[in-house]
Length: 364
Image (cartoon, rainbow, N blue to C red; front, top):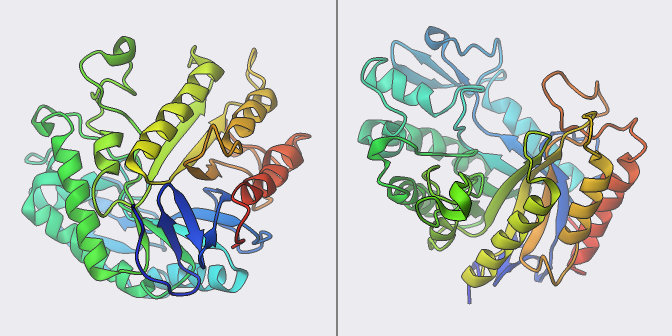
């Protein structure tokens, strides 16, 4: 049986294909937005634990950053405009009884992604994206950053899990199918576990499968072209649970039936691996002709709270649920569910309670 060890109070564990908190079943809803003012019961928030400053490559977040690159060299910012801000978020989560998923890197350039490491260390002319996963210098620099962040919070029960990277891919010719990404996930997850035995670790990919050339009618999500293999990575000894992302919009002609099958396929793979999983980013496009956000989300949520059909799905994080009560929807975010929407109460507040009740056990 897959069971994470240890019995320290307040830390989330796994027991087979389920999460547990203090020895009782733990299921949850949540969001990808941070707000210490949110009602904390059964709420999990996924936040970025990376924020690079790299003006030479157009990555300049202004006065707030966790690591700065100068002449190809990184300097970790432990100051009040750096990791001390993350300290504040973790302390606020502890006080509010909220759990956090801390993501350590990004496939995309937002806030400085993986290529920030490779470009600085290997040079603009000499880098490839794959180098982030294979080059010893780059891996060493990333591990140094990871070690500093993990050390700060390894004793905090507010942290539900470490996440290796957001939506990591490996699509270049030297990715060897899914071998490179799977090996990297094994290496980094093992390294984190060597530093911190208190917390769970997840990979954090989109949830792409690698079922063979042109699998599922040459569907990118299934045929392995992404370089991710959900099934293989989930089987790694130091990956504690799986995660998937799903966005439904008019450009995705498969729509709602595709989304339900996506959930089912991942649930089946997780049951087979005897590990739990979460839906880590979930969104349905709003204000689009021919797309009923509320109806589709209701169908998805009905499936996700079903303890039989979605038996291994222990948590669901909405992509953008306006928990901060600010301007909504933000520019460039067509997947928000806003507090002013008539469906907010059912799709967000009500759903969080339903997910918490799904396990019938402990609340956060």
